[in-house]
Image 1 (cartoon, rainbow, N blue to C red):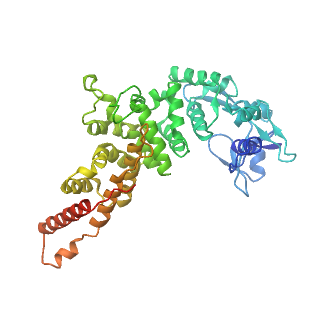
Image 2: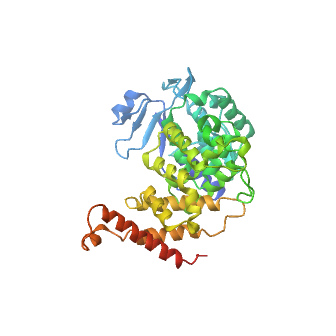
Image 3: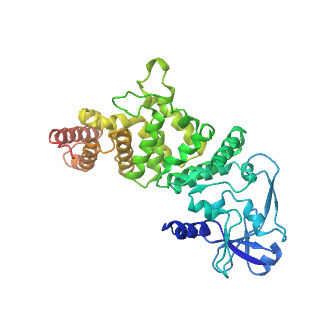
Length: 415
């Protein structure tokens, strides 16, 4: 029996050594050669999951028996697994997706076992599939796209991109369950350059399968005076970039992706104008959220940004009563934090245009100030004045409209 360190821990340490990066290597995983399930259990390991994966009795690190896999059906579940004690380390590493993930380290000597030239690909900043078995698991398309987003500056080897497109063309992506797709999308949204993930998926024709509503935005024109970049798909990626710079919240980044979905169904004779695209987009946001089975907080923010982002952009010219109506529709009284997230997403939309990146967005400041002041208006003050029933709501609304008007009258646009 011999155990080796494998996976991201080895990869990240090698990247730090070879490229001078400062990635925190964590989640030490092990592969065990020359052992059996019975022997592992005798040593106190606890088995978890479907495959022969075990938790170390003390530190709870994952140890897995070396195994090979043989494709037997569609999707990423259609595999026959062999984990007999004769499986070699090289055979186990060969089933891994990318060469940079197919390295192991001998914990006794520190020696890196690199049968598929992962170190060379790290030095050349290339994401390359390890073996022809790459095409057997459609989830690898999303994983490679996510690694491209994580390791900004790495390029995908042409032969690997060709294999990714081959998987998409074969219809294998359709067998992925929504939870696994969302897990990869969510992980990508946590990266510093999530837009790379979606651009890679589009390039290999996978985005049309994974997220057709988003994929449909490329080639849809916008008025050049408002969108010098013209293409709605490019604009959406620019908005995602801005959202990533403005916030680490994945809810905001997801909403940025959804805000203009309605533009994809604008009639041809109306282009490049997009009348009521906010309302038309709501069913498409619903469909996207339902497909991925996203948490409710993602869905609710995405719907609100889709429906009301234009009103946010027009805040400086809106009547106070319209601003109050917007506040009510956004439920700012019960969800002030969600409203703040809404403003960040709208700001990302305004700045996510060619040449608009450094423009101020005073609308967010105006709406933020007015909400904070309006939140100070409460029913108790009116009850003390002898106002009851429906009159309280009317009085509160009137007070809030007056506050909004006063703030607008004295509002100075921030730089």
